[in-house]
Image 1 (cartoon, helix red, strand yellow):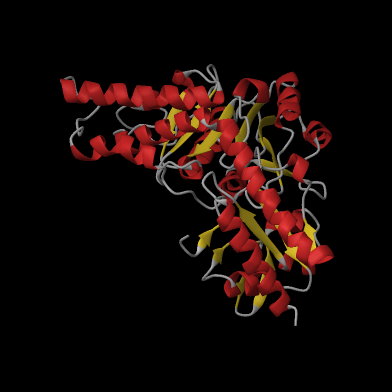
Image 2: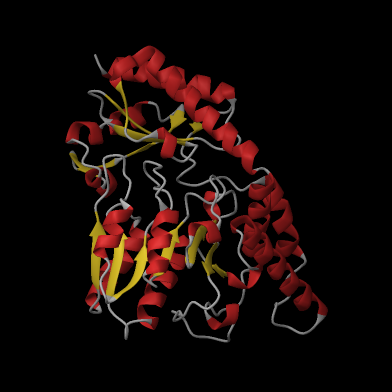
Length: 380
């Protein structure tokens, strides 16, 4: 067993060996430009279309509704700015939540400078948006609702299907950032009722530097860049064949092994939590309802323990992340934990532990021992 044990899969995932093998020929011999008319160009164009179909299959979309981007941040920018700019004659009001990733909130801040108004919805104690709040926030000039599918920090799954029904009833475009959910829980675009959905390659065992945006057929969107017309002109530029092939393969694997991986990740997380509670009891505080949470994600606080001290103490053995930032001796709580109204002590003690599809029982057992010993020593 190699150390340190990696338990921060919500931050990023390693590239799956099957994915790397699929990409290799496009690094070495399959170098043709997909826009070329000769054979090595045409074969690469076919590879991109195959990848598009693999991505579409995972989320129950049509291949022509999948657009490759460089990352989830670009996908979110394209979705939010693209819809806002294409519909500004209808109105300049956008609804989002108070727990979105900066790849959403920073876009919203920019749109404010362009004359848009943003409504940031609160969340309940578990980190869930109330669909009634969405409905009540809708105005005549609302042109977009953007709510994440599952939160990256605490793992809470949002009631996207219910919000989607509200959006459809009011004829408002609906986008969800599904960076953390795709491959972990079902993300069927038709069941969810979304018009746009963001995918991040490096969150589901594809390489960094590739993402995708699902755009439902008929959705009017303004492109952010201008060029030769690749990706139907919505995302022009010479195609990233290598990484697109990788994302396609990763989506194929995610669909193939979906139930197995989901059960394994949840078993790892639950074993970890049970092991911690068995020794630490009520010193362990779980921040969310695990019945409505990503199967691999555990947001937990240890009583009277600094999250940064804990993460640092165990860093040579186990890698986890914290729910706060520490600069010059001052602790800043994340906007997500603030929105959930966690008291300062609990928020400052919060860590995120996220398991992966290849996390082993031995790694979990080792992590339990390391974390328990660290909490006991830091409590002295």
